[in-house]
Amino acid sequence: MAETKREIERKYEATGETPVPDLARVPGVAAVVDRGVMELDAVYYDTPDLRLAADALTLRRRTGGDDAGWHLKFPVDTGIRDEIRAPLADTLPGELAGLLRSRVRGGEVVPVVRLRSARDVRHLVDADGTLLAELSVDTVHAERLPKGKGKGKGKGKGTEATWTEIEVELADGTDPALLDAVEKRLGKKGITPSASASKLARALADTGDAPRPPAAPGEPGTAGAAVLAYAREQIEAIVAQDPAVRRDLPDAVHQLRVACRRLRSAFKTYRRVLDRDVTDPLGEELKWLAGELGVARDQEVLDERLRARVEDLPRTLVLGPVKARLRRRHAARGRSARHQALAALDSARYLSLLDGLDALLADPPLRKAAGRSAEKVLAKAVRKDHGRLATRIERALALDPGEERDLALHEARKAAKRARYAADAARPTLGKPAKRLSKRVKAVQSLLGEHQDAVVARGAVRELGLVAHGVGESAFTWGLLYGHEEAAAEAAERELPEVWARASAPGLTAALTR
Figure (tube, rainbow, N blue to C red):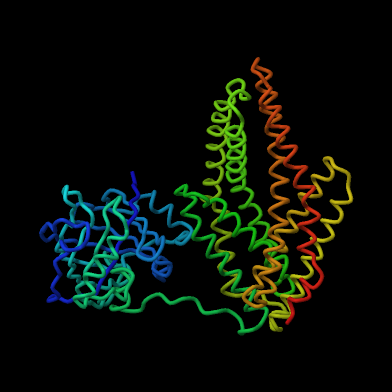
């Protein structure tokens, strides 16, 4: 069974003769304990075109030391990675393979680099002997492995490199400020931070070709280049959020769903730039994927909302097993929703979508407008989506309160998202005017989102109240919650004209063209 460890570390340049200063003088460190030298042997795996390394992921099979096994590392921030460990095995464990699926697809990972390290370890401990950090002086020998080495397929020899580096890794629960103090002490002795983010990055750079960032598509300044750059950003987000969803990380489902929506929206908004014969089928598949993920996300939002409503009620108004019924509902529907989301990510249909998105970037289906000025083409598209939003808002506000108006406001919310996403995509080209428009339309979207959440919650509360009543429980609290949601929806409707007035102010869209 795989386990996850948050790795917070810093690396420094060194040579075999670099002296390590006395770190017992660092505030908080009472002693430095010599733990001896251990021999580590790790083979790093990647796709033949180094897709993992391009995204700063590392996958290795390591022997030696006290953590032998398979290790998969995801970047979190500078110097911070999540390391997912699985027991030592001859082949890649299935749990780790699943986390790599959005990048590896139907291919396989192969050995690319072997690192053999002599690790001289020191423990930095406090006055109670508690481990604060581990410092190691690593003498590393890297060997670039020919493709297929170990499987009888490769020919030729890999190149080699050797270096020494100092690594300082925090123990769990230690204040990260300790790293600053250690770095200050090392700096006084002329020891500087490493230029490479990881051993693998240095090994690839020193022994052959390292992965290169993809070239910017299209002619600079054209509509095609601007739209494709935005599309690439969303596609990369989909690929990156896939393993986060599988790991059940907070907000991962939401972020993956947003990337799908943004990309699909861009295909619609900028249909004069990208050929609809290609983008429409991809848009339908993105809609499918967002829908499969939406069950989990919508359930999460609704459950959080209802729990918060109940917590805000005085105890004297919570009659019957209200909280228990919400917990059971969350557990049952949450498991089903997560199963549905993971089934979608494991499907052949999803992999086909990812391949289709890659093909779009590799061979963009550009139309005539793609070669025109990005400023003019994008500004026109943004204004068109804003006008579409205006039509839907005006229609909804003209209706009497009720179900028809609720549906019209929901459609307006969808139009607000599209208008906002269009402005966001245009921000690198149009600058502050697009940013200002996006911000004001986002306020409209958020208000309409609150209205829709209240409408959905109202329906769920009614169902829960009917079930409670049917088994002889008090339905008083459910009725109270229904009233709260009804009031929330009405408040959003009252506020909408003022918020929309700011988002439709004269000159707001005209400013898009400088």
